[in-house]
Image 1 (cartoon, rainbow, N blue to C red):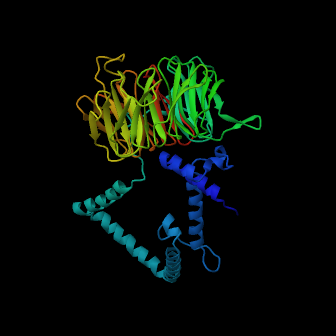
Image 2 (image 1 turned 90 degrees about the horizontal axis):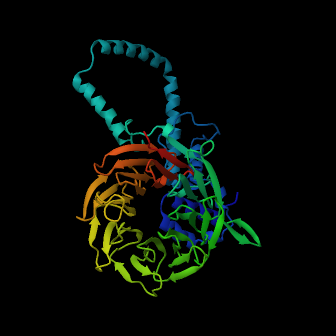
Image 3 (image 1 turned 135 degrees about the vertical axis):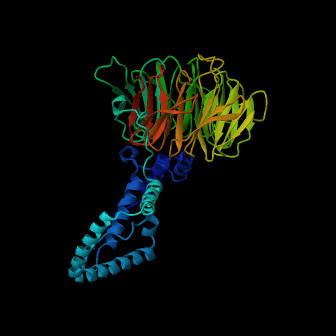
Length: 524
């Protein structure tokens, strides 16, 4: 048997990623030099660390259950062994002693078998009498209350979903092909092509158009690097992807530090290589001539999409940049673990605006459809609204009880195709809730509470009438944004990292931790 520190570190790194501790995973990966190891991550299955820990725990339980003469203890364990118990010698010895005492008790009980038979006959007579004289109402209520308490306290059971809102399996298409967790997915804006990005160092384009032959087909976009004059798999996660506005090109960002541009038929058009570490986010501008990326190297870069050259690199953050969003075709905002938000413009050698006020990492930023307001969310559990007209935040929204992972504006209000509907902002948190906000008044309209694990993604339907949410509880929920009611629900096979709507608003895509991508058909 051999165990290396690289192997242990890699399993811990993967566990942190799969559990949603993306920032901790990044820091641990850098300090333990994961990128320099020779481990092929695509061959390591999801939940590998948990699996090996469970097997070790089973071995310790088996060891406890073996008698001194080598025979197996004939009886169930007094109680299951916890992971912490398994590494404490005193606990193990105490459990072994308890087993020996229980074995002795079993042997003593065997000696009284004949007497027990007689007692059974007596008990049967008593039971007959009990049927003739049923228990009083108070006694029956007490027993029912005990049973109910056990049911309520069993937190391991998933929340039951009303059959009226549950999406039937006939309306769900599960796409298999990825060999590791799928972190992201995005619909093509003009056709039913769904792109997905995974820890298996590939992106995939799934064709879900009704006229495609025999259901969905997939194009595999392998992310390779040059070594010794040959293209070899990078073995790095695909962390971000975005379609251009006319749906002809797909941009991807990877932990290998490269951004790539692909055609819709899966051909590599350009490789963009100036970042000095993993890329966390990238976005096309509306015009489609520039791509914006954010990296662990503390910089953001605007790329010329036609030439693949870097137009300008912005080195203003003092820590890794986590997210970016365009205000218009040449101005953008970026956020970082340094708790700052910078607004930068192509051609300017310093930020045109800097927003400070968060007290922890800023996870995501989004401009509203008009480009007038910027929303940000943070590990400090707050959601803030900023305006270019002032230095301090317009609203400091405090309601979540844990970190806020992401935010989305509704496609409603001024500068949208739904101008007569009020604009809303959705926030998703590790406190297992989603909140809908009236930003004009700075108040929470609805708190959506059906999830039981951290919520990683939210997305509005194109008309703004519905909101999809995805959580690590394996559920995708669809909510009515006006009433806050749950209208559809689907339970997948893995924790949900991302949800997205197609352009028509009749399908929702979701990517999951078990390597699956599911498509929910919401048509009647």
